[in-house]
Length: 505
Ligand code: 3HC
Image (tube, rainbow, N blue to C red; front, side):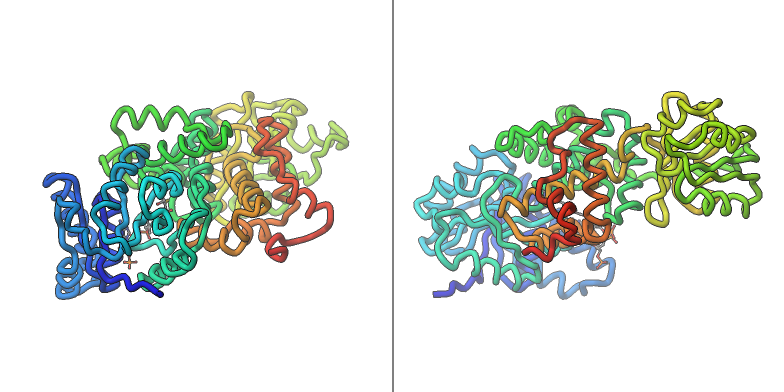
């Protein structure tokens, strides 16, 4: 028999819980919102009023519609009010003991036919289900922040979930205007497993001084087209939540990359949790744009590497004296190389990694700066241990003249964007290869859950399997992290000349 979900309880009215309550109320369901005490309930009411107020201000809701939505939500501090709910979803902090205590209580209070759902980001749904006398009617219903906006719901079933229930919850998600993706009970499910690993990696690279917070955020936005850079997104998710998810992932995998970056722990301990406390990686400010600079104080530029002629021509059009040398491989005669750079104030090495190898061959290594052009708008500017600050500054100015945003970074394998992107793509290949989820579901989950312009497999196809494989090899050679070694499936597909993983599923 198909259940009808008309009355829904939401326990915990923080950012996620209030958003979830709003989503249900917007779809016409009656909602009982429960908080622990009157203060927390007041904050929950504020969350609901702010979110719907924002929609009102933007003209997406009329005053009457807003009143109707809020009118469908009853707020209470008594869990007993959930007795006749058809579905109760919890969105309380990510602490297993809290969840177990809550579900024991809900099991006692709610009618036997009611479905109990958890919005947990990463904890075991099976373990939560096992605390109740109805484990077959306990599922995960994982929303994404901001819940009223993000279109994905991960529907998590366990080995004991009643037949057909996951499909009923998926149908409910569709009724809410969301797209469900059905997943098994693994730490982090699809999205958090891939997303938080990437966000944690960004935090590690920040700590290593690869680039600045603003630089990394700008690089990922401009280079990949993600709606928010990793640090702005960590602030949105909440650093406490992110830290907790990483801990759960680490506990399950013992993978060093899942160990939360120390900077996360430090910020959390300091109470800097991101947007919810007004400060985190950012102190409430939007992502800073790189400061504008005037025309660089150089007049002659040498450009080396693939694409050198075209780049030099653009600088030539802007009035600089240029020389270009397309081939700078080790076999190139040293006097040709030295001749090309001899009179240049600054030397640009395009897409040459590591830059220092080339610098060591030049008579004036202080003048050499690496440049990696990504897409149409970004230029990663890599300085080596020998590069002078003046040369770096000049090249940043030159990239602006050709219409790109410079992001300064150290001379490390794959610079910023690819260093973050390729391991994420590799993780997606491993996830698919493990049989956990299909390529279509993983792609949809990342597009709809995180607003990515494309899913990981769509990205791999666009970049080329070989490019991604080779980038991973370079990362592995530099960092020796086993997780950066290309997934065997990726390696084999390249060897076999297959051009898309998506065709396999
Ligand atoms: N509540 C309600 N609505 C909101 C909102 C909020 N907190 N924030 C933004 N919106 C709405 C706006 O009203 C606007 O609607 P409109 O276009 O109909 O007017 C729309 O979203 C776009 O907002 P803005 O124009 O103000 O801002 P942006 O275009 O910059 O979009 C964003 C904001 C939707 C948050 C976008 O930056 C984005 O998609 N970011 C990625 C978010 C993400 O990755 N979320 C998943 C995190 S992981 C997670 O939650 C799982 C957990 O378990 C950890």
